[in-house]
Length: 166
Image (cartoon, rainbow, N blue to C red; front, side):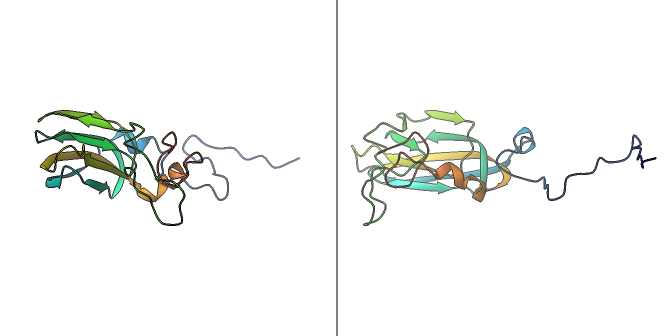
């Protein structure tokens, strides 16, 4: 007769060897709980410049509020600058309209997105200072988990998100 093992109701089911469960980009529970607060902003960004906001963990939600009379643009790749001298193209976010404009004081946008960075730029029609505030809910997922999302095969400069090509 062969050996037969019976599992009681309170016994754990053994996991396969090498299987690890933990925080990661596909971990649903990290998005079901309240996020850790992150607040930043600027009152000194010139209307012709761009600011990169890097988050310490992957976001769950981002709210951005325009606090000036000048337009601001919100995007997830840097605007049309060459990345380095060895790269053939540039990431033409502005030319291809891959941004959202917040055009008046108190204009805001609430996004449920998982990113580790975002960009805010002026519309370049004025050298006046723009002002904005950002509130983000952060997960406990390390930003390195997003590495594969930045690989955009249709983007010649190697920077940006899928769907944002030159």
